[in-house]
Length: 318
Image (cartoon, rainbow, N blue to C red; front, side, top):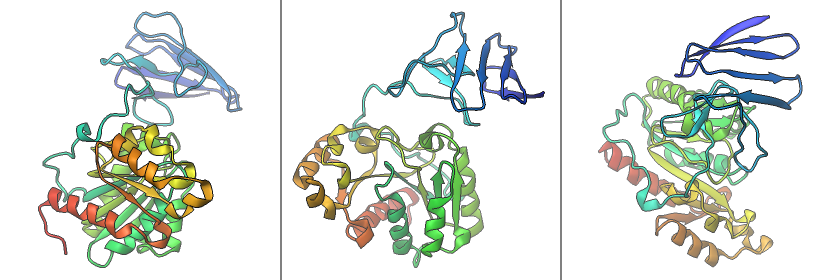
């Protein structure tokens, strides 16, 4: 029987793992008691107590009521938990998609010698994030020292795509397997991306970094501690209703890219409707219609990035 210890900022918890996959959690010094069990299959059950409450469960993201081990109530009243080696985070419902005009500003006074100006590129699966990474690498690589980090849950597919298409020399591309919720690696526990980005900055004296999130839902957005400039990309093939569905990615990203406009006729999407809804949901914030695979709109996206880079670094473009 293997015994190990986890630290979550609320005390220590000792856990014992048997060969049958069962886990017993021993109360830590904080007095909080958590216990759960796992079978070898994916299905499992949890029960827990905290803050003097009776054992209970919760639900989020439209799932049936369930519980997590290693769960507690934070000072803000939200339920936090940790899994897959990630830092404590919450899946509490977001009250509002937020507004572009009230979005979190870039961090002031950041040292770009430690980590170069970082562009976060997020969006749902299949919208063209990696294709945009490729085109932006081509756009910037002749004039700037650039490097890239990609995120996938269990593979290095996107990083390998960039290497195959010679976006940059292979040593300038880092592929990260997050092993958990894609949004956690760009928001709740960004350390899995910070390390490689800092290493690339040091190794190549990078001036510009691109960080691609794994495909996620409309609620996913980058932490400002990770991304100095945030791009969220959606695609026309998903339907013209997507912009008005909102979500922090759509409403609060510095730039919204609406990709694959050439498919509008095939799927019956109304681009004028998408333009109207994008302007309304983003308080007039910028967006770009694009066909990234064909290079349409890429220079406009690059221009937005360079303007932000100049403002943040105080340097003139090359």
